[in-house]
Length: 448
Image 1 (tube, rainbow, N blue to C red):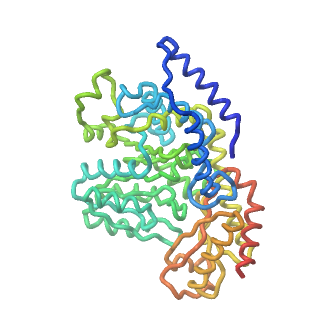
Image 2: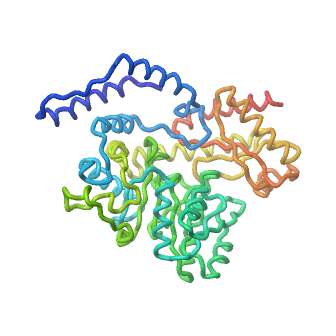
Image 3: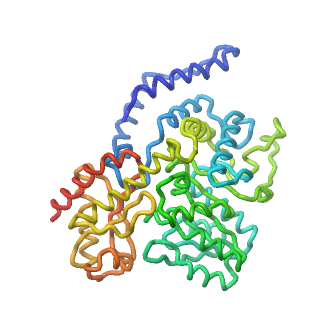
């Protein structure tokens, strides 16, 4: 977990940073190092009460460890503690943020766009729907029933009507249901989820784009979890087609703190039409006096924002450029392959049934049992037993209709079924599949 080389690199970088202020009179704020040491020991002990998110045996929720360079750069920036709301508070980090966002836009084919980092995907999605509500006032937002719950919540906060769209057996939005709602003329925005956080399903974006020929609505691509897979070379045909269509959507959300190897919280919002910046226009009598250049606070609903996030992301993108066929893209391919190989291994067992062929790096699987109630209980029992054995998984509650094709022998006697869910966000997961499957099978034998 701890690599002392990282501390050495941080020390060297801090010495370089200090050189930039060597012309100032010496000043070092004093603090009680003895008392601080005691408190930090308590912090370290308290922090042991966490799951081992960094370890390949953690295959539960979407928790991906930051890259070492992101940790180091983030920590380094805290000696300055920049605020990317205005250039007065973060000149260097604001420039880094603009460069990062520019490079992210290029991933989706956007050379010209408006965008910035946010505190996370929820805030980024809020800005997308807020702009959409200005362009289609009073009109409804629709999203997949498997979309992140943030869309329904944000719509309520913004006072926008919201409706969920049923998914087909592959976990993707039903295109006929989308068109049925569009015919009513009251839909202003369709949210296409590029990788649902529950199933890892990619909505049929190409078909949604085609509907714009007949209906007037915006398309927002929520790619908070799956956006970086646009760089991957091992996507299936349907997912590849959907990702290639992202260049024509109206707005995109991406979370660098998921597959972008960043510390929490770091989200990103992009708008294809830069003119939507007019909706953000505001003034401040005290933050915008030192530069005529664009302040990031003038295109953001957030005010103070940590410049540390931009510094960490910039450093990471310098080390691992956002290029197809590059090292970063290769790591994403390893995640895709880990999920597919894991699903294939499960199909060879007698205890587990993968519900879907994974489109990204999430595998959802049910447990064998006479009926759905028993399958749910077995899943919950295995979840707890596997954790006792230091294999950490996740649970997901799904409509039983999604189980029909995967496990037709299980009798339906409940409305929902609890399934197991594994997220293979670490490229190292691929090397650990043998051990993970072995631990999974032994835990299943223990619960009977």
